[in-house]
Length: 314
Image (tube, rainbow, N blue to C red; front, side, top):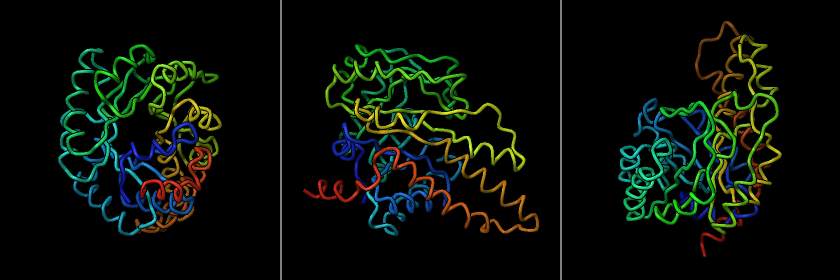
């Protein structure tokens, strides 16, 4: 059942966070849906501009509508991740996406408001909800990069939300895109979330760049011939703490890539005679499903799908 992120956030607010997982291909899609159905978690499928280019936007859209038929127990949103205005408008017109993210955070505050407002108006006219971003995360995400953190200012967040009418807001609190998030101890600014929650009570917030970068995955990749050095991520034990401060959506991409890399490196190391692309795929799908189910436990979303579905049917 495809729903909007707004509907999911209404059920999750203050209790748990919804996992937002990026996918690029068939194997990821199958593993993602299996993992969420098995853990009985509502979830968000994220399709980025890069994924739309890699697999072709129509292929991804058909995978979403087909997965909805294959997995009738799934409750999920189809979301554009980090879109520019042109891509947002294309997704709004597609009839497949229930949510889009406009990322104009690299522009001035005023221009960010202007662009976001245009996307919000177009999306709301078709019943589609909009995530926006204020502040900038360090690291690289698709075509957008930043060398330093630009933290979200709570007072600006209040003004931004009121002037744009966006439905959720991605905040910069010290997380980073990619596999190399921290040097030394992580310093997440939960005080920013607390202040925004007081200014915008009940308003859904989003954490980007929140992969945990499991060190066992990194170690296994390196043992199988990889060379990932110094990778570190967000402490997953902080997810529920963030949820209590209004974070309803937590983006996880890098961790899934690490699972893919580990499975394929180990498979071809252990089976150098193999060349059928389906063989490692058969290993990856259940491994990815297991990863997703475990992540949902940490988010608090595992076991929530029945209550979520019942509330949505009222």
